[in-house]
Figure 1 (cartoon, rainbow, N blue to C red):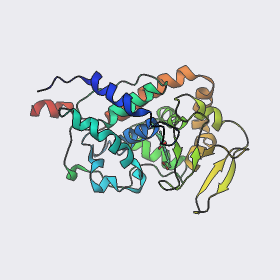
Figure 2: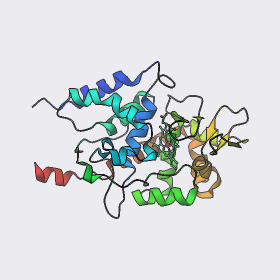
Figure 3: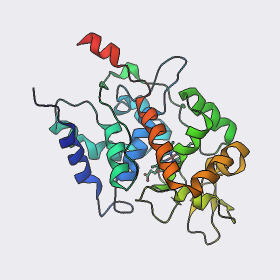
Figure 4: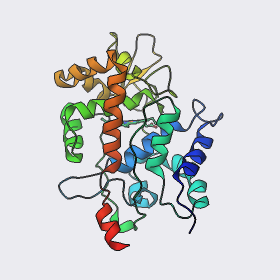
Length: 267
Ligand code: HEM
């Protein structure tokens, strides 16, 4: 068997991040979204869903409307998976490598996921709905096992990337630096002047004064909910604190549903 050298895999992932023809020139943001959506289906009560299994490669989860567009990320990673025949699907590792390469924190990551069959797929509808507010966000993230501080830290990843009209229906980026990991999501969110903007497809989003940046209704919940807002204010002023909390929360997210004892017992 080939040696399990994760550094080589990390280097291969790094080498495909820059894609001049794609969005803002990097697939880093969509790789982060893939890692999050692969993990964020976890239900702590039934211990189903989560990052183990890579079940998004099958149609049930792949066709969840919340995952629209993520085939692009999976397709970019496929040749790397094929090249290293000993590795399981590398979506969580790709998210970690992308964040680091975009100047973000080092996120703790451990191997040990398996490629499961389609019957292990979680049902659709477990990921958050961007049209909804704080109650819905808490329901979804508490189901995964997160607290308010961790939820606020995780949403800071919206410093990256953009919304696409042909995927979620929303349009635009949250920050002026969509390929850099930083605390700009909170900095922008706490600036005054966000205004409602109705899109032609009927969706409502928010635009800054000059209509260059956007926020989702769910993002605005972090401004308007008093408990969330308190933590938003901290991260807007303290980037190192955000980096520390984000790295811990994202590392925890990627571990959801991973069962190494079972794996070891089988070997
Ligand atoms: C309340 C929770 C959340 C909601 C409602 C939400 C919703 C969305 C939506 C609608 C998009 C646009 C998709 C598209 O049109 O391409 C998006 C993009 C994105 N989300 Fe979230 N999200 C949430 C939490 C998170 C979390 C926890 C992370 C990671 C830790 C994350 C990372 C991203 C990234 C990086 C993108 C950009 C993807 C790209 O550029 O293609 N989101 N999110």
